[in-house]
Length: 387
View (cartoon, rainbow, N blue to C red):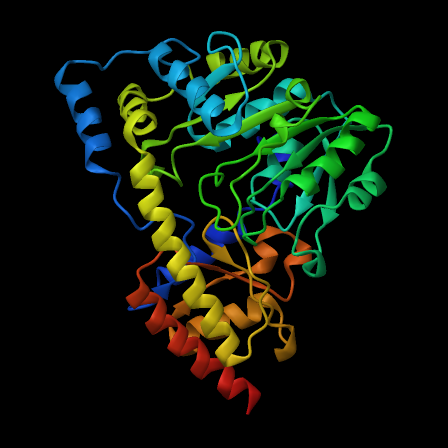
């Protein structure tokens, strides 16, 4: 019988995060620090708006690009937080999470064989989505000594005549790294000089603990070269609502909308009504959650310092990326032994690219009580290793 499978799909590795979660689920009483999901419930006023929309019988399709009311609020939000003006009718689309936005942006922009630059360590979906779009993924290995930021030199060295798109994943999952305005200005010069485009994944934009997040789309000459992606999962604790958005020049958005239209139809209607409320009245909720994450971040950094575990200080998202090279084990070996011996689950750095070897991703989207218990177990584990 003919092989029913597509070679391109078979060649893609499953998510390293999901593989590890499957192992964790088989161990009773394990403490997981591996999930990239807020531990807060969606704020009640946002849930109430979703419930109200159901009670009003708002259970039908919205327009393909999204609820007009929501697109207006998205454009207003980007304007007041980043100073960027988007036309809600031609330059904004509501998607099923930020992940769909990444996928349709790549498919709308890439011709077969063109190159997509992907800084790593980074979110697991970028490389597979690039391959699915027919691109040649080119990995830029970010370095700990640069606090895992992308430098202009690294970008310039990676660009070729085939380069079309740079994915810019900051604030970063898994490292927690951020790009400050001076960093963005330096790489923007390269982007303009080399005539390439940017997909800027800013899903953690609201969760920064140093200076306010700056979008590369806000810099001179960059809005027309940029697809800005964000959503509601992380900042508003709405992961299960599956709602994201993208803002882009009208010519790019027109093609993104085609793909979204044929593959998805529209994002969930109930979620869209709830998201309107989140954007209008959710700033205090975001500030409260951000402060809680910041306290946990500081606790982890203090704990790592006490136990002598090397870790650069991250200022974004809700992850830390400690280095475990001193123990002479691979990231996966360390994570497997920690889980088996102490029942604490973390994610090997290699789940986010080969250059994540020697590191672990630890999420602090957990209560301080859970973090304290887990850190005590990690301390016991590395004390044994050192002895």
